[in-house]
Amino acid sequence: MIPPERHARHHAPMAGAGGDEPREGAVAAGNRAAQAPACGGAPCSLDDYATIHAEMACRRDPQGDPIHYLLVLAEHGMAQPRWLQCEGYWMPRVGVDTILGAPNPQFDPVQALRFRALLRQASDRIHHTAD
View 1: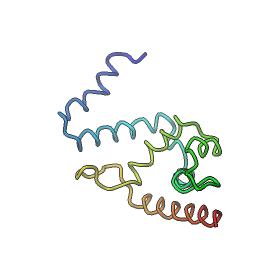
View 2: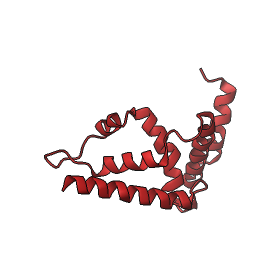
View 3: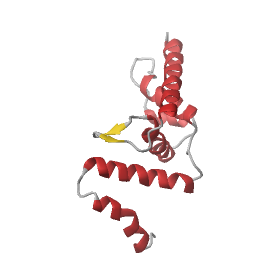
């Protein structure tokens, strides 16, 4: 059980955002960033994140239908809760530099370029395999 004091400290910044969506998004991103060191840093490598992300988006079954994301995760030995941790860690860092018009304080342009290159490589590999 979470002690009431810790719960209040955790949610006070969100309450202080007063419905301001960009500010709420920044607070939520900050909460995820604060949790990462407690979890030992990134829950997966950027290489793994890009590969799995590409496979979820691009892979198809023999009938041409998208492969269910849980099958992709299982092939990589990853459960959905861990994938959600990976998404929560990497997406703010490599996704976009602004959130609802406000600067994304976690965005890392170097990592974002690397992610896009890795994603392109994985996508090319998937599409080449499908040909």
